[in-house]
Length: 252
Image 1 (spheres, rainbow, N blue to C red):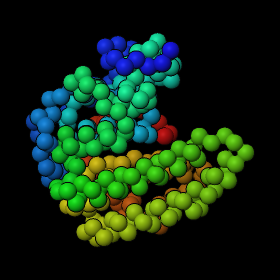
Image 2 (image 1 turned 30 degrees about the vertical axis):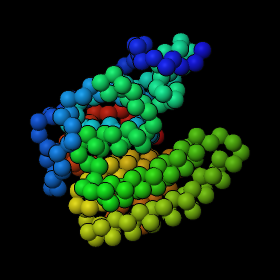
Image 3 (image 1 turned 180 degrees about the horizontal axis):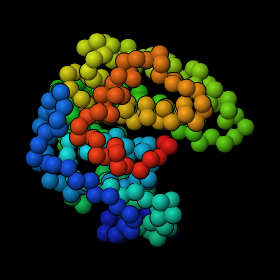
């Protein structure tokens, strides 16, 4: 039996409610625009207990202090949901979210939704489009990382070598130049304030750091000092501290 088109089914899973102050702006050196919503929507995010596609959504919501229910499903729970014909998003895949009882699917749509709610989508149409284009590029890197991470075939080692030796340096060099072109790389990827593209890049870099540890490759970011500094800036954002300290430690 496949997924149901109805959202009435209750999902049984462990949940972690993210509580944050909705009446104040994040304490950063760079002010952020007020969220376009009242941040009072009921948001439930469904994904596995990994970072991967859902982590930028979590980061954005935590950064802005928007409360949400972080439902982290096991593979068994997700399999049972689909087997029992319960609702599992419009397309039967994770992540998806329910906002005031209405479902939103697809990770990049959810990133943009969270960014709009948090007021970090961009200051104007050009910034929004620019940030969106960077998110697409960053997701390309994440998908390449996933193929490397989960490959078990005879060519697994060759895939890792190609990624580390060719794919990653090319992408990182271009992102380094992108940072440098915006305020000399001393701030964020687009404009003068943090956007969703910064949180997606941060998630990618955390995954690269874990891959480097697993492969005993040392620091793969040594040639990209602006990206390293950017990662440090995001990691030190005051309103992310509790979440980064308490979140599950996952490889991907």
